[in-house]
Length: 284
Image (cartoon, rainbow, N blue to C red; front, side, top):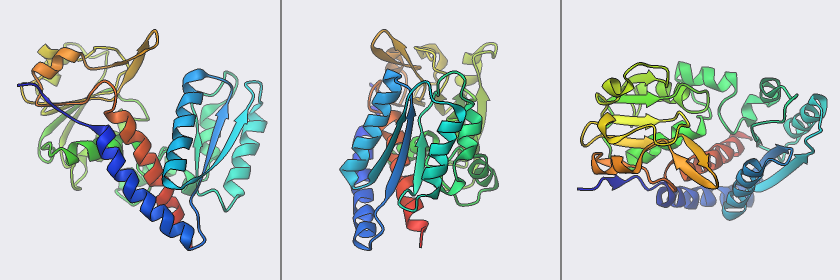
């Protein structure tokens, strides 16, 4: 029996409807939600991603404040834009699109963002709050994965989750989030990476596998316990085709699986919108 699809497109649509209602209430109270987006250079995928975020904002009633700098922009010029958005009361959250051009210190730029306006939830202050279990904006992709699993009734609490990848945006924060005693989490978590010998011996123990390594087809059917949930969170490009870390044949073994398109991506964008609305709601 083929695996049940973890449909992020449909779920994100429901989340956006709820966020649109909250954004309307804020606007009616004279506090319209504002998101600042910063794009440096003309990288095609980055420009497309920012355009999608801005379209999402327009769809649910968030005002987008877009700053597009040339690839020749200096560190000081990029930081000056961040400072201006930090100081603007109409901007409740800020998205700095990565990667930044060579010569720009990404860490320095991200640290410049006011933690209260950190829409990605990746500022050290907010990651520290995650470690402590304190309220704060959650990293978008990890939060989206938790929502996706919960909405499809995938058992996670008390189960074994294997995460492939230890990156800052997905693997590391997701391992913290899933291990916490909170709804939809409270799991035993194992983190592996592409340098681990016999990765399959570990992934076959997982009730849930999250692949976030950015290696096309990394997870194959022989690496999956029958009936497990498999989430393809890492992507890469083969020419113009977006590839998942999960081989298509895994659907014949798994109980649940994300589609190549329309799984984690829409959920990441929905969680970014949620963080933007939450930031606006906190301003009094």
